Image (cartoon, rainbow, N blue to C red; front, side):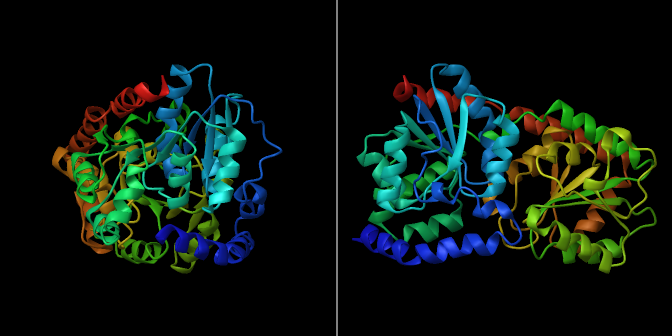
Length: 424
């Protein structure tokens, strides 16, 4: 009955969902491309399989899926891989990673109505589906089970906050998650919360993000970019969210010291690049945009107060160019973003108080000496100034960051091991 009501609501809001695509396309044109795919129409795509299907809703999930996708392509050479998304930025990231690989095909997942999901599954007939992290759609999960397609929730995480919200649905939540063949959790805490919901098949495999290897070309470009700042330190504010940039810019204007670093400001969403650039200019800072820089041919040092990271797929470069990095989404209650990418290139991390999306990784990084938590934007600048002003401490945190990232690798192999009995 709950699923019926849910489907009825989806049917009623479907016209609004389509109008929302048009509205969002004003800032990001990708939202009105491939609209037919969102309605289960895939006639212009090849259906020739056999397929393994991986769903990665947006940018973060797509990047996290990369080591697993590479391993699946190697382990199952007769299969092709269908990579689905919900956002244009996720699709763009997938194209950057796999656009040249003929064994990988991308499309949008349809809206969560039963007949649209059936149309999607009937067209591609995947041998198995892997849903990344938290993207649990009731009709998608139920119909996939009814059609006999093994479905795994991979790199799964369930914060205490999400657990309390989900537990309100009681047996319905347990039934939903038990339609998965298996839930492969990031941490023992995540697994414990899934089991508390009543989920029967749960296994801890670790966090795939630790297995992400920073691209060598991106790290090399980052080193070139770092050289262009000369003797100035570089503080990155990466994957910042709406509402954070004003706090960061205001606190940066009151830098607690004489040698203020360059601020490498990288908003998470590309549709906000122009907005954030204008915000920094209004705050009185000189601004240089990455899109106007030829990294390989820099002819003059970068003297701007703020460098805006207005590009996609270059986080490794931004982190490699930085002496220390604040990870966005954590100064305001959005749960934080992935700190592992920064640690993987040896960049120490600062996190705000709100890290429930990466709670275990954050606590482990703090315990390892790779990360420091701050209460607000002013404390962020004070902590950054103290670390940048202490060469020994900065070097120690760099070493701890690399060690932390290396110690937690292995989730890809454990995930493949859990999938093997079904995929074989």
